Length: 169
Ligand SMILES: [Zn+2]
Image (cartoon, rainbow, N blue to C red; front, side):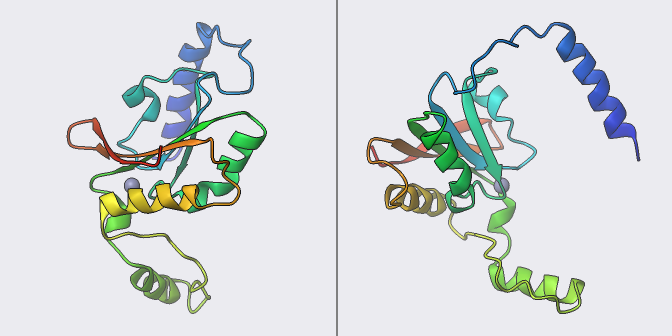
């Protein structure tokens, strides 16, 4: 229903800001950490990982793909001093359910031939492999310093549990 979301978030924010006491936090994340994860609504990184205001960057996109997050990762590391990247993909991810050609076909029809073939939606067929691929992508990138720690994880939406898939170092 139109307006319901706005009403709800402004009410929730009034409650939050009434006792907010973190106005003096510095810009760089205290834990020198950047998390790259999916935009999936079932995953709440702060809640699931015990993060508080000022702790970490949380970079989200469809699938939690590192390639899509690279612009933000560079800014996180080069301008804001983060030294660790944690990549978290998750079970039952929508990105497991279609392929680039399938989505291209759907969008071509929906947008009446508007060319979307240039967009790589970074879908994947193997969850754990997608995590390893993203760790390797960052490790192999010339714009990621060798001293940056990188690890890859899977979050299980069924249990709320994270498990480690890959360690680059
Ligand atoms: Zn997802």
